[in-house]
Image (cartoon, rainbow, N blue to C red; front, side):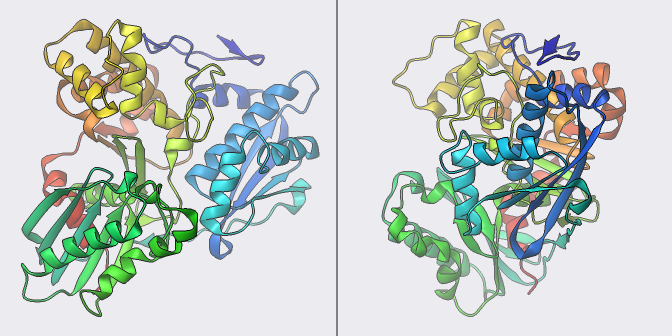
Length: 458
């Protein structure tokens, strides 16, 4: 197969998506014969800098392939590592094009505005000679694993909120309450719901020593810089949700509170259950949520928002409505992937159904071994295999835990089986290194809210 003059090989294309161009596979083929060195560095908060060295062709004939590689690479770094300043070192022409794309009126204006909101500073693309590339400055930090004492663990999801009262690592009370944060404009609704959960858990213990929160969104410290939970809150009221968890904790007393992204807490729960590091958690639900802990069980301070990171280079792939980009993870590892593929398999979905209801239709067919549903889940399994190949180029992964409503039932088992089969046949070394798995029983016992409760060091 060929794309932009680069020949690449894919032996197991998703049967319902034959135009799929896996970014990781194409990138390795592209780099094989590239000779001109460049470096890409991304700076985020507190002066942390991630530096990646690569090569391009640097010829007129390969100009479009060079740009496609660098622009997608920058995009992946922005959504995995995070940052507000991008350094393109060693090619002024590419730096200029990337700068235009990631401006507030460029093709990647969504990314530029999002990162500007997260880091509260405009996104900047800097052109530098290769020898002036900034030095790497990365610091991993320990997260969680503290189980002693009376703790509250809170898991804020988009459709329900879960809270646990945890004493010395053992949940003594848990509850799950349906709420509607994504459709509510008044931030008082969110605040009241969080406080109610905290107070309920507190009432089940003799005292509260610490509170840990797992929440959808991007957090710097405990501050919610961006979160789908508060998407309907007007911009002029965003300040009320930025410190919402700290304010809610004060209703309980002067106790330490730590807030973390739900993807990272998922990875933490996996690491606690497996008793090892180098764990990535990929939750496939309303969107794709990803978290990662390194070999020592530390977090890297990265965003890990791979829902917006590229996985497919097909320029006619389904567009993500929010970011207006194509080929990004949320359309491959969420209920949207099932909904996208179902009609291609001949499954008619009532347009009046909600996305969650559409997913249930396909899941019900899968439980009956309907061959149309089988092809949907087989295709997602192929997506997952090539995503493992891609993600492993940016993360040191030994265990990838796939979970979420898309991974439930027979469909999840088939996704896992298909992904493992492709990795075993096409990438045997990667298959030997990375265990792609569903949460094991011990990880399930740890759970999201218990892992969240372990976040603060009290």
